[in-house]
Length: 183
Image (cartoon, rainbow, N blue to C red; front, side):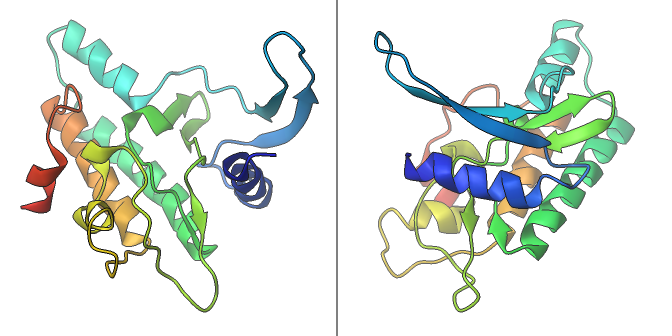
């Protein structure tokens, strides 16, 4: 089993009992000689789309999301992050596409690059995530081997997501990582 999938499985199994984390039901392995074997995770259906989809929907109508809607989404996402962080886990890829909407609320998804922190070292030093949403200290890990970060990087990413929702930017990931480092 791939290390990323194993890590995602472990995190989902341990932490999906929170109302703001996608519910994990199990996984199965499908043998396929033609397309290659696949491991499937069985997760809660989140049929409301992503926050990014919601922003695009408002944009198509020439509108922007209201502050109360954004505040609700952020509050629910923060509750999910608080649950992760209290359990020594960093998501590391918070963005509108990884915050899904359901009739029951707001769910954090995609734990493929998440990291569980050890009790002795509450910091990481690997640069992972989606560049536009990555905190400057996470990006810095690419070139500065002595740079580390902690769970606060998720807060930065959620802040960028809030900017995206409120101001309809970023519309793409064209912003250079170097510009983020200058912030």
